View 1 (cartoon, rainbow, N blue to C red):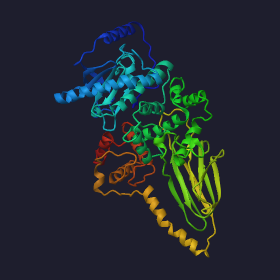
View 2: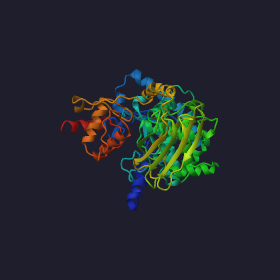
View 3: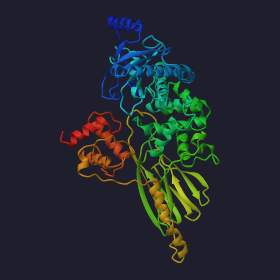
Length: 565
């Protein structure tokens, strides 16, 4: 997790102020660090468990490349036996850093700023008490002089959750945060550019694979990303709020990207003055790739539907650990006999995958797609026949963002249709919140009601129960309406994918906050994208970090308002 200090910082130093600052900075740099030193570090209050801005910490270990500091109040509470075990854990972590993390990441991406702002080749690592959802972070602020940013710790520094100090996976988090430290030097310092957050996080999260931590799939970071992705596959890869779903969709996209185009796409895009999508396209061009970012994203969404290399190698993962990964599309059922028509409207953000599967019906099918003129939707679609063979095609919207698909003999020759619309309009400015855009489609089928073929009708009707069971398996979530007493207080953290009485309570509360907060006003008991956006709107109104995650700070404010505060 990376935190920012702003797009760019411009300061003018003049006269004695500059001389004095430089002199004092030099004096700080040459002061030797000793075991037992206590330093009062500035920290990011949005990650700290109690919202602190400063944490006193004790230097407990010095290794060849790392200083290990631990929050003093936590360290002092540990028994001598526990402290002895921590010393061993830190020594093992240091060896892992020296022998694997540092040499492999620096040989691939380049080095951190060394000796850096503090003129010390060692990196400071602070273990502090963080929110339960956080593993670590990096602050760009620490890479600036205090005259530029007064809350700088003026050293190359990483922050890790002290709750993970005994966890063997702490090495994954250390590698992730070290990648951010490298990025600051390679992108900010060398090129004067600020990397898009989504791409900065993409490289950092992929380090667990680079460093071999995903070589055993069971229990790996990659396995967890797959589980989270399956829960919410339509999360945008570029609209970053730091949720587990953001990491999941982005990590699986990067695995596909590196599978097909090589690790140099990540390294070349880093060692460039370009950022985000532009840097990826420049790197792809350098590697001689025929496809650009847009085409690769579209192929990735197709791969997630079929994941089959036999027809087109672009429509699958090459990593054997991911060769069974497929999304479950939203199912849309047409009446099994006669003519029918239905319409659906959905909302999406840029660079989000959306999968809808149409089954049922018998006759000639027409699907009409539409959105807002001026947008750029890509709409691949997959047609399956009765033998489960498929073909991939593309609907190309016109200048009014409209288009249609026509399929004859649907239900007899062809069994299903999957459409995969993705919005690909936004190409830069991803560190500003993305908007939600609508798209709609109408499916109509012209068929003949075969009143004389009762056997066929009975056979088709017999399939209804099977289809209903499939709906229940894939989409079935019980809608829970809140009782009066349940809406007096929210006691648990709520997030995208959650469900239950407290989610209904949250939705009722957000609805009562007005259309500026929750314009849709749905109370379903399921925490979806609309509820997440409403939570972000509420957080923005009250100056709470805009994550869409309803944690302790957001709940405290909601409960205060629920009780007349």
